[in-house]
Length: 338
Image (cartoon, rainbow, N blue to C red; front, side, top):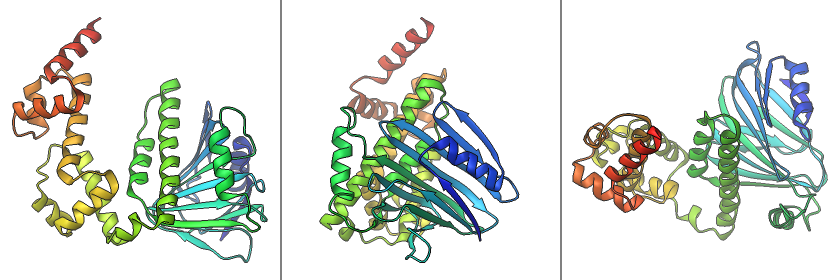
């Protein structure tokens, strides 16, 4: 096992330590750092984003050739770390010899250092891991961050005399937002705003999941296993990638081998929508994208996205956007030509 000892309170220092320890290439654009792992150790990246407001985002997306122990030094009784694993698994301990806790696929976790300054993360070789940590420094309570910092400090730091760790339940919504985060291709201020917005949503979902777990409502009502949740997540990805496909429920059940009831439960848990509602949502979103980026007319869009008829498309488009598709398309072309 390779052990890497770093400090994460400053991003530049953190990545310089990584580079010195294991090699690799670092790219920095604004407040975003992307570290490409040296091919001798594996393949993939470690990325961090400074969101301002004393909040930072750290993401691991790699496959390693060796077991790795990454030690992140953290300030005591100040920082709350919200973790999520969207692929593979990784483990955490506070110090050498202390208990390891494992985060698996779609699982949430919360860590705050009360007595131990180190967080050790353990990654296994030959495993594709996608994991993220959102760190909130609650030491600062200026006007911009007073509410969230004060609230998180009360929840996860105050009145605790020992290191705190919470391993939560499974949440597919967070995985979907992390996919959107990885798919952001815009640059400049647009990129910064999109990344910050998505990470704030992920943070909100992690805090909400903790509340739900404490109330023991949603998780106790979910009958799906971790494997079944993974299959549902694969199905969601498939629909996102191929919105025009024949996604009748009987075909979806055959595709992943789950009953219609389990698929519906998974979609409800993830998106708050039935399968049919989600397919409609994805197709309408794609339709708007095609209107903005292609010269296709309404009939062509209806045909290529698998809608049953133009009249049905117009009806549901207006229900969602309060605007007829023909009107939207016309306005968009006028705006582009202007």
